[in-house]
Length: 209
Image (cartoon, rainbow, N blue to C red):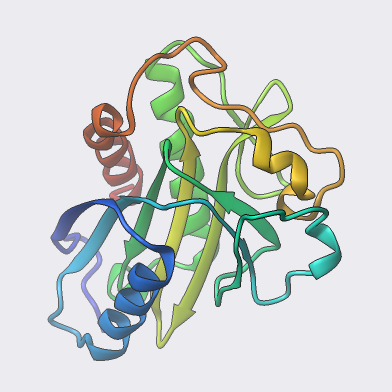
C-alpha cells in the first residue's frame, strides 16, 4: 500500500509554444512507460490555435471552425479552444501513489486556479454542474483529464491573454451561449510566462492538501 503521509516529488517542465499533438503523444508515452518509481510531472505549455473534442465530445458543438483545425483527443469533456496566450498545465500524476481520486484532483486543480485569481484580486468560483473556474459566470479555466492505470494526464487551461473570438465558434465545453473571459479582459496585464510559477505554486499547494 502507498504511504500518503509523504507526498511524492513533482518535476516541472516549461515547454513554451508546442503543437498539441506532439505534447499529447509525449504525455501518452510518458504515462505508458512510467512505473511506481517514476516522479510525477507538471508540464506548462501553450498551443497554436486548435479546437479539441473530448472522448464523448459532440461535433455539433463545433459551430464554425473556419481555418482552425479540429482534433479529437482522449481527454474527458466536450469541445474547447487552445491558442497562444492560454496557459495549459498538464498534470502527469500517479494518483494511486498519492491516494487521490479523480474528484479530488479536479477539486485541487479548480481551487488552485481560484487561489491564483485571488492573488490578483479576482473572485473565481467553482460550479458543481460544470467543471472549470468562472468569474461572474464567464469561464476562465477549463479542465479535461484522462486516467490510465491509476495515472493522470491532460489537465487545466487558463485564459491569460488569449484571443477569445474563436470561443464564439463553438459551444464552450458543450454549453450553448457560455461566456468566456480572460485575465486580460479582467484588467490583469500579465503574460503566460509571468504566471507559470504562481500557477505552479497554487497547484502544488492544493495537491499537497
